[in-house]
Structure formats: C-alpha cells, structure tokens
Length: 248
Image (cartoon, rainbow, N blue to C red; front, top):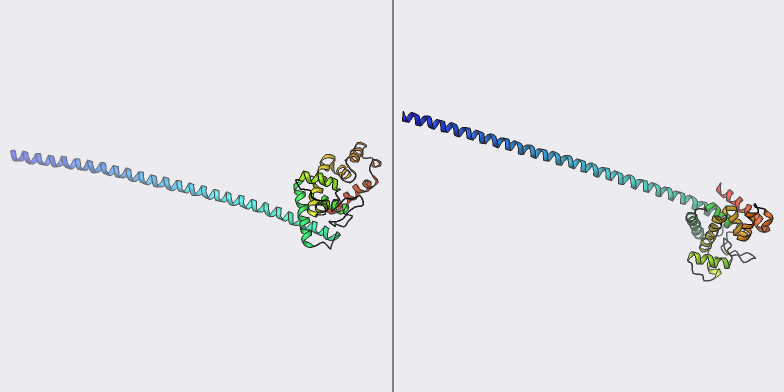
C-alpha cells in the first residue's frame, strides 16, 4: 500500500513536472514568437523607411536635375540672344566701317550689348542708331566734329570729364578717353540713358544733341521745332529713322 502510494505520488510528481515544462516551453514559444514578430516588424519598418528615404532622395535628385536643366536652358537662351545681338551689331559696324579690324568690331559690339543690359531704357538698336548718326555714318573711333565733340558718340571733353567722374573713371586726357571706343561708348550710354530718363526718347535725343536747356524749352512748347537748333531739328528724326531701320 505504501509502495503503491509512493508510485502514485511519483506519477503525480512527474505529471506535475511535465505540466510545468509544457507551460515553460509554451511561454518560451510565445516569447520567441513575439520577438520574431517584433524583429520582422522592425525589419519591415526599416525597409519602408529606407524606401521612403530612397524615394525622397530620388525626388530631390529629380528636382535638382530639373533645376539644373532649367538653368542651363535659360543660360543657353541668354547666350543665343547675345550671339544674335552681337552678330547684328558687328554687321552694322562692318557696313559703315569695313576697314575696322574684326577684333575691334567684336569688342565694340560686346560693350554695346553690355550697355543695353545695364541701362533698361537703352537697347542695341538705339545705341547703334545714335553712334551711326553721331559718327557721320563712319563708325570711326577717332572722328571729331568741328565743334570739338570726339569719338563714336561725339562727347565734348568738358562733358566727358563729368561723365568719367560719375563712372569712376580716372580722367587722363580727352584723346586717351574719348578716342577709346569702349570708354566713349560707356560714357555716351551713361549720358544718353540719363537724358532719356529725364525727357523720354525724343526729348533725350534733343538734349543729347542740342543741350538740356533747349530740350526743356522744346518740350514745354509742345515740341515746337522752332525752339530747337537747326541741327537738332534734323537730328531727332534722323536717329529715329536709323533706330527703326535697325529694328527690322
């Protein structure tokens, strides 16, 4: 009886032990499953984050490429316009002064183009029209009038001194400054732009040729040509005609 009880008690202990083991294993399995699911979730989350990061990077790269392409396209358009304008100016110079060296034609054309960009109320055609008439259709950098006006844009030395000071250009001599085609154009365009901003196009041309006082009187009279100097009366329509011609 005692032996049977001992056996029964041993079987009960073994059964209890097996139950604990099963419970322990079951808990381990659940923990392992939970850990596995957590790891898989983290991997999925990381993969998703990487995909979003990659997508963001790709989007940023595409945006960068689009910006670069737009900038390149704009630069090419600007360069195309510049080339067209430069060729146009050089053709005008060659028409009136075929003896001018090609290198000088290019430098003058470049300066005219830069002045047209610098001063919004000027453009290539207007500058070329003014130079063409002022230089007596010669486009010679060393042209000089009977009144003493010098260079392509026919600047009087006294006026040149003030313009050079405004431009921050050291004044050396009238010949060195005003017979230099680049400096002459730079000073002449500054002067012409200032006058046009004050008196509009035709008034500015009147002031450029005949002086501001006469231009003011002319505008105040309702543009009565009798107020202008005889030369100025022909100057304004002549420049405007060339301006229209160069615009075609």
